[in-house]
Image 1 (cartoon, rainbow, N blue to C red):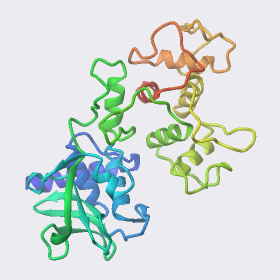
Image 2 (image 1 turned 30 degrees about the vertical axis):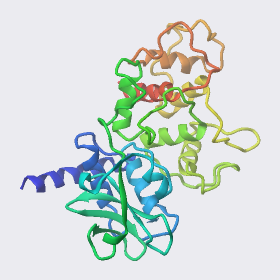
Image 3 (image 1 turned 120 degrees about the vertical axis):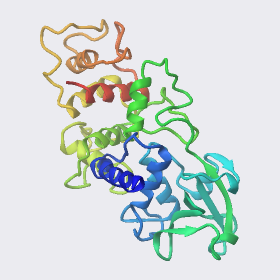
Length: 332
């Protein structure tokens, strides 16, 4: 009975939250991974596939783990080296399992997710996403090894201490699947945010579908951020350049970030008025992004935007951008 109730509750959570590509932090990451993985049973195998329209084995694993905020490499052999090696006896639900010589090729050629009871789920070329036994006559002899990539508490990273001003924002948005860390357990808070990454993060919150993927001349439909970039263009959140490009790999400045966050969350006029305090000595009232920058200060629930200088032309870091999104999501 308890298991049945748990399943019902999990399905409710998935129905309500899956569009954001995340799951609730109410369960463990192991439970979330397995529930998401099983949600795609029956999806066909597609060589090179990375979406619910069709997966290959490593594309499926990467997709499932992205939904709980864990960023994995694309290739099975690289996924094997992404975490901590464990023995077969140490397997726990959520661990990755790997196989060799599944199509007359040396080395790792297949991967799956261990779900307990000596079973794993994977994208098979014969029947798509399905559950198999590790001891079956086919998979048993081909077992290669296992790796554990789920470590620590959800939302916590090796390089973000609890004393960091951005800790709450990073932990909260990570648990919600809006931002992700890296396979080494780090968040890299000081790394820069690109325009493409910004579009993807914002659309994980907005959860919109574009009318067309034909957005900018330098963003083909095959681009990993094509859908998100098309959405933010249609909503008028981020503009392109006069030459018709978007430049998804360009880094974003703090001024640009302030403007797109203001637009994405419809903050213009809500927290800034002509009588607003002007907190930054390096941002003049006639600066093109002045109002949006002041808004970032006015909505700050942390101390990330404290101080008398904003450094508008500096590049926005992952921590800075994540905190801006967190603040915007919590505007009353």
